[in-house]
Length: 222
Image 1 (tube, rainbow, N blue to C red):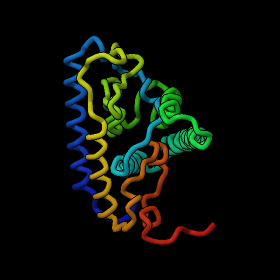
Image 2 (tube, rainbow, N blue to C red; image 1 turned 45 degrees about the vertical axis):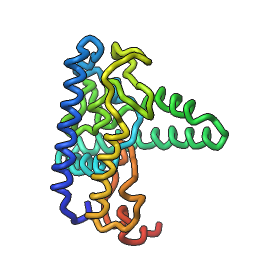
Image 3 (cartoon, helix red, strand yellow; image 1 turned 120 degrees about the vertical axis):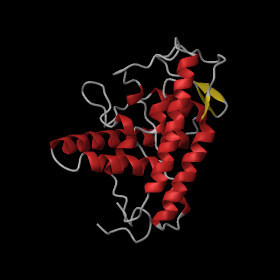
């Protein structure tokens, strides 16, 4: 990772995560029969999604700290490579659908039905970095307000179109974007797109967040 101190930004991210956990707990307390999350359910661990830059760096730092070398790192890296290939296939499929003129709403719905096993999911259906999991994982199971529409977990007791306390994803994403932009600025990047990048968890694990990533030097030639 690039030699920059992100500790204060990570602390702010952890504070945001604590807020998210508190919100989920509040929804669960208000709707105990509808929130059916349980240990080793793992439904959310097969949902394809991307994480913000600050989340990606945080996951990368935790992964390298907990699995610096050895068989466990090798197996997790192999799983991340498989997952990353699946994410690439899925995004290419979505890109072709856009080119073919498929309505955006249908593309989103088709994407949501796809299943990709998370690289961090162990054989016992438990997350191997549960305490460092991204925000999306922490909210899965609670009703979400996504672009004005209610989204619910298929295994929950929430009904689409029902009246439930829902988390406003747009506001949360804006806060993650703000932290991500701070990361890019701290690294010294002058490219606006760097702070706005979104990647799968698998790529967050595999990436080298170095000067080349932050566009501080030209990419190496093959």
